[in-house]
Length: 324
Image (cartoon, rainbow, N blue to C red; front, side, top):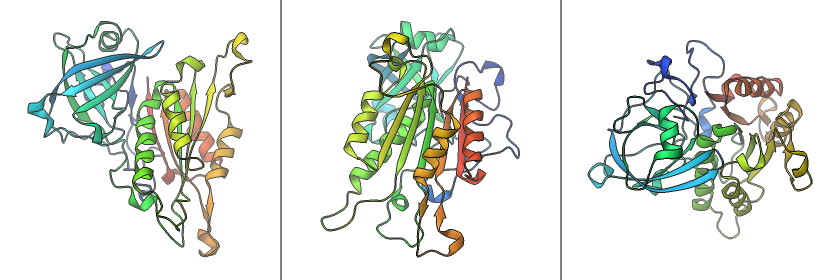
């Protein structure tokens, strides 16, 4: 589901430490769904456990940022046939000999299986500490897929050739390690664009996705280079703004992104940029506001959701996940 430190998020709240969870209060809380035509699946009250557990081997370890480590895993061949996931889901992460269970968003795509990648931020939580400082190539772990915070595999409706009423664009807002599931979504959208490239003589897709991504420092912007490559590959369709909240004075001359938290003006500008119109549609349907997905620490997530609402986006178009 996301960067979750809970083995079963809705049943074991005492183990929550550094991770993501869907709205833990459930019930009639705000922002539980997103417009169905975007291909995003609404958050359910309980996480999905449809895929059987699998053994995986640590095949490679990479320093993603000074505080985030990327783990490359390979699913055991005996389990590979039954193992699958949806873009944005997470895995419960079982380490042999360790009682506590980690939970981390999958940043690779289903098409990459049996290879799978996670990105884990260092913390004092034992599974995260093990992933960041103790894991070695050749170590074996157990994985169990969960979560309903995901993109569907078939995003055909997002790329219509012609449509009287345009589909909503998509705004992704990430804070810190909350980028993990949104990075996977951004990558998958790029893959879908590759597969749906317009044939000669036909206009390219008019659909757009914009990512707002905030971290503490430029060096803590995980996946920055990969995101920039995806943007360059699909200019004007996939776009991104980076911002940092604790920029050192001696780095200001070299940093070209935003400085400070994502404020209301930035959110409103992004929503306005992604709002679509159609002169052929009925008057009440000529403006199609974007769908929005937010992922980050609780205070940041709540703040972003409030800003998105103030920009006029209805609750039914907003989906969020919190991590801590």
